[in-house]
Length: 190
Image (tube, rainbow, N blue to C red; front, side, top):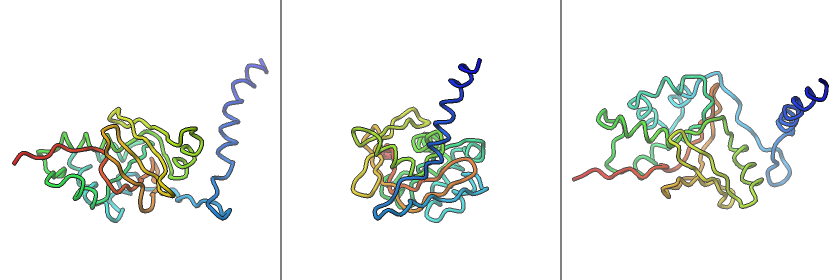
């Protein structure tokens, strides 16, 4: 019985020890600083985040505010307002007629689990080939790599963005600002 219990608890102990292990050091030996968790949900965090007004409107239009208020955890790779302007000129994901496209765009920017920038960087470092893949809620793959100090995320369709700005840790996940859209929207017919 003890052997069975020991075998069952060993993986849990390893995970707990890894979590207590500190974190990756920045250049110069100082500890990497992690964002402090908030009592706000992802939906509330998104509404309060500067530079993400368009994404907040897209979430509302898609009818997914309730999801981002839910249990989670999720990591939202949140395109900035500028990303919508340059990545989808002419496409208005806040328009009611674009509700389905808005929902698809959001699912392509959300992965299950709460991933800090430090977690993503550590996963890239551990990967033998310098990249790590994560599956989105749209069942697509996002590939994370380094470009100097920056973390770059590439979608399966070739769309690329860099993690930018400050991450925000919410009660049910993490908001990771990105400088581009991870989808290539259809251009509207003219």
